Length: 124
Picture 1 (cartoon, helix red, strand yellow):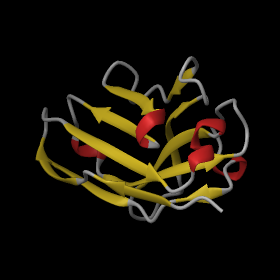
Picture 2 (tube, rainbow, N blue to C red; picture 1 turned 90 degrees about the horizontal axis):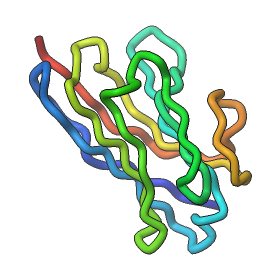
Picture 3 (spheres, helix red, strand yellow; picture 1 turned 90 degrees about the vertical axis):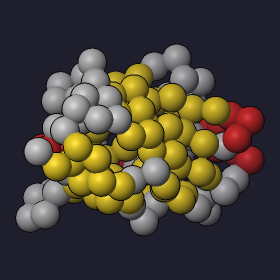
């Protein structure tokens, strides 16, 4: 079982930046592909970004491409989501997820392990 703990959320003005972190509990973290999803009130989970086990392959939602960057640090068992040029529509609870596959995926059902989420609020 992999435990995931997100941090770094908060309140920021439009145009600002935040960096989310997701710390994994297991040393085998490096064999998992990781993803970030978000859920706004009244909406379903939305794919944001994903990264392969090696970090060599990344996927982004069109809505965040060019503004968000996903990365991972194997030594720290941590995956990051750098969010720049934030918009009010980025407001959501952001979740980190892990899947027992080296390749990333874009749909929530392909991830077996989830964190509790961290709130990101972007004011206009």
